[in-house]
Figure (cartoon, helix red, strand yellow):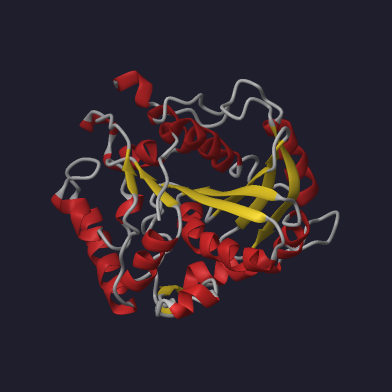
Length: 322
């Protein structure tokens, strides 16, 4: 299932995803205040029109984070996800070692059963599933509500739109949270529109999972073709073959080969089909391979390639070379 890719909305959602990195490591009350301040900034693509309505929740060894922002004038909500904090080299940081059956597919409706549609199935990375469950178990620091309880309440409105967004490992989590929203919304009284915007997503699951997401959900996988992270885990071999972001030094080829072996032992991997490729900016080799990797993956580089304003932290160097 697809809808038309909205570049302007993508800029808004990428901005929200970028804000998930704000002041990493702060105590939860200070992190919440930092997010509130960032959301108020009018020079971002969000234009100061989004406010924090749930969270943030931080949990797990990877410092996974989730919060919910709402457009102040509409019934639009965004579930904003952060995976592991470290960006540079993140393709090696969370190599999957096991796949597990995904438990959050929507149930078939009576009409779908009558049509003979198969029961949804698919496997995802156990690391992604562990992170998702940890975030779903988390509670708003003030209200004590879980994410599911929050949306059960707001889902009573006549119609709401829920975006799910994240960058890097957070983008991988987008693909497992979209079906969760669709599953949960079956018990809500109002109409729900759900769209995923994942920026630089590593592969979350196997071909069955990817094909289900492509056919029955709206989830855009937005990539910079010179960013190594979206090549994990289904396309790791292409990093060397396609020289991403430049010819790969031998020492890093060894690391990639090791990641390939681990991923293949875990199972088969496939990205969902709706992939949006952004324009690319080639950087000079003099910058160095690891610095290239970091620069191409930077959340502000994605904002720049989307023609959206950058956030105030960690500016992209891409504009200097375009």
